[in-house]
Image 1: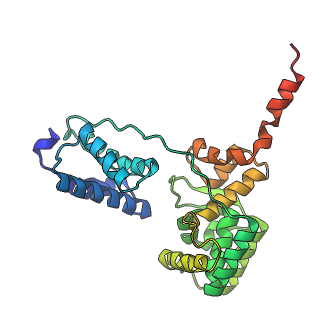
Image 2: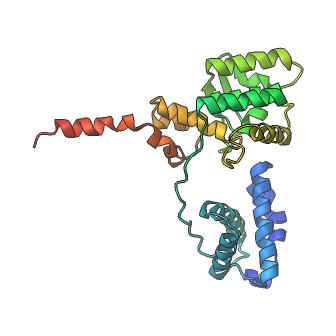
Image 3: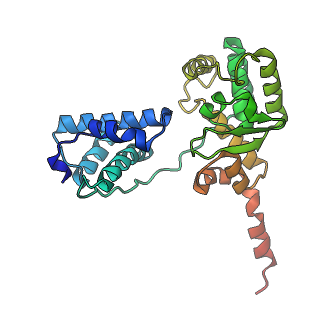
Length: 281
């Protein structure tokens, strides 16, 4: 049984992390979750990986103010490691991981005026940060996907994101505004291997926070760089683009992730009312 080996979570992380995760910010986040659970186990004296541990952790995380969605992410990291350990024959029984219900929180996206306000402030801090932000709104790309772009990934009116969260490359068409950003980046930063590769993420995030402080959105904790991706998705839905195409454009692994934006496009349900109107009993 696992309990007799005295393998700690940190030891399991060192053993399995490179097998289960590619080097990325996601892996770093998972490592942070594992370390947090490890420290809780040391402090509480709980040594077994069982349902009692999951119950204690749930109470602990909620007392810290974590939402169910955050707890689910932490448990997903723990589950991934323990399942690997179990498959290796070194853990006799897995605890029962049950996904906690998550609230459908309001999706924050920019209005055109809010977007322009933020871009104006970013221009004052660093024009390149504003250019990156424009590209993110127009492409729906994740920040990491945009920062890793090479010039060879851009072919005319199309761009291919090779390093994605889903590990599946995707090619999308560029809007006119996105093409304009790329053209301007070619002129200004042709010495670089990609349009945004000399922008460190932490510096962009710092510039974003400084720009946000100058706007009326300074106290809105949901106004983070990821709001640019939400803005793109929301505008596609509001323009009547069908959900399946939005899923492909954004690179969502599952349709359920894209369905968060479906309420912004109620017109696709008009056919239901039309069918009822035409029904003859």
